[in-house]
Every structure is written in structure tokens, then in C-alpha cells.
Amino acid sequence: MGENGTVGSKKASDSASNTGSSGSDAEERTGWDNQLEFFFSCVGYAVGLGNIWRFPYLTFQYGGGAFLIPYVIMLIICGLPLFFLELSFGQFASLGPITIWRVAPIFTGIGVAMVLISFMVCLYYNVIVMYGMYYLLVTLVYMDGDLPWASCDNDWNTDYCVKDMPDLANFTEWQKINVTLIAAAVVVVVAVAAVVVVVVVVLVVVVVVVVIVVVVAAVVVVIIVFVVAAIVLVVVEVVVVVKIVVGEVVVVVVVAVVDVVIVLVVVVVVAVVDVVIVLVVVVVVAAVVLVVIVVVVVIVVVVVVVVVVVVVVVVVVVVVVIVVVVVVVVGGGGGGMERGGALFA
Image (cartoon, rainbow, N blue to C red; front, side, top):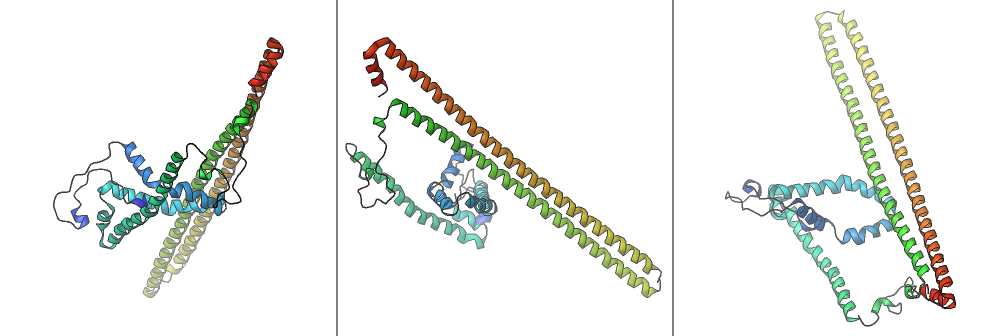
């Protein structure tokens, strides 16, 4: 999204006062036919090589799952607000990046910088697109023979190049069934684990945000109470001084009592706020622990169910194979044995 400028959606309104242009009527511009079209357009702007190639690489390089913590934090603090700002500007004005950022003279350079960045990104994006086109054409040229990258005898191969790949053509039917079942089980487990991880991350982020909001609100309340108490004390002391100058010394005792009451009220309010903060934090931590326990239990249950299903399928396949072999052998004698062997070879 940020690499390709601001996305607009509906007809433009009169933007002469915001863009520094003349006072003529705004030009009518076409809009999206439906919300789905707009959604896919946003996805096309947002998803690119950085999501498919660079993000997994950075995740692996900087600690795997630990990398997701600062990533999610910066996504909430910086990424989503900027995304919403740019999207809102485009929805509101339906203008290009250079024109929309003329909303204020100090922001004029932002639109120009966005266009220049998009131009520079297109330079290496087009090179990577040509990689795909090149390998597509080479694949079509070598349709009758081995592809250049099908072996490990090339100059660009590394020590991690795999030479001996299993030949599925020589696998028996039983081996193919095993491979299929194992692959299916792995896919199911990985998918469930990915969903669970996403749910846990979202819950943790929500809990952290709630805790931060509660703590900040409590601190603000304490500060307000202290400020109000300080103002009241200052006012009372000024009244005392005025009364003493006038000659009403008896008021000093009343003012002292008021001071003590105010201090006690402030202490009680602060203590109550502290207790509330502690209780909220304890409840949130307990909720997080409970969620983690539930998620772990769900993962264990899902894995057990997948394993049981795989075992049941394997047992059923074994029984079917044995029944078929017995029927072939009993029904056809020696020739049946040969046909049975050929069936599963």
C-alpha cells in the first residue's frame, strides 16, 4: 500500500481549498464497483515480495517466534495507524499521492517522496518479475529434457543441494499410501498449530493493550487527584493567610482540620486506585494463563485426534490390503499370487 501511493475510492469533492488549485468544479472520478473489488485492490497493494520472501527470512534470522513480538508491537504502534491514515486520505479525496499531500504546504514533499519511492521499487520489482518469466521460458524450452537446475552439477549449487530424491515411480502402493497419510497428517497439524499461534498472539496483544489502558487510566486518576488536592490546599492556605491578616486567628484551627481531611482523602483514593490496579493486573495475568492452558490442551487434543485418525486409516488400509491379497490368492491359486504381487508392486 505504502509502496504504491494512496488508494482512492469514490467521487472527488471540491478540493480546491485543500490542494491549492483554482476554484473550478472538482472533476468527477469513477469509483469501485463493490467492496470486494476495493478489498482485493488493497490486498494487491499491500501484499508483495516483502510478505512472501523477506518476512519468513527475517523471522528465521532474528529468532523465529521471538521476532513476532517486536513485529506485532511496531505493527500496532506504527504500521496500522499509517495504513489507516493513508487509506482514509484516499477514501476521503480520491486523489493521487502528490495532490492529496498538498493539504498542507509542509506535507508537499511527502507525496513526491512516495512517488519516487514507488519508482525505485518498480526498478527491482521488474527485475524479479523477469526472473519468473525467464524460468518460465526456459522450462518451456527444456520440456523434452532435464532442466538445468534439476541436478547438483552446476556452478551455482551449494553443499545443501539434494542429489538423491526418492523416485515415486518405484514406490509400492503401500509406500505411496504411507507417504500420503503422513503428508496429510503433517499438513493438518501445521494448519492447526498456525491457527492456534495466531489466536494466542491476538489474545496476548489484546490483553497487553487492556493492561496498558487500565494502568494509564489509573495513573491519570492518581495525578488528577493529587493536582486537585494541591489546588485545594493552596486555596485553603491563602484563605488562612487572609484570615490571619484580618485578625481571625481562630480560622487556623479549622483550616488545619481541613488540611488533614484532604490529606486523608488523597491517601485513601491513592490506596484504592493502587488496589484496583493490582487486582486488574492479577485478573489479566490469570486470564492469560488460563487462555494459554486452554490453547495447549486444544493443541494436545487436536494432535491426539489426528494421530488416532491416521492410525485408524492405516489399520483400515492394512485390513483392505490383506483381504484383497487373500481373495486373490484363494481365488486364483498360483496365478492369483502372481497377479496379487503385480497389483501391489
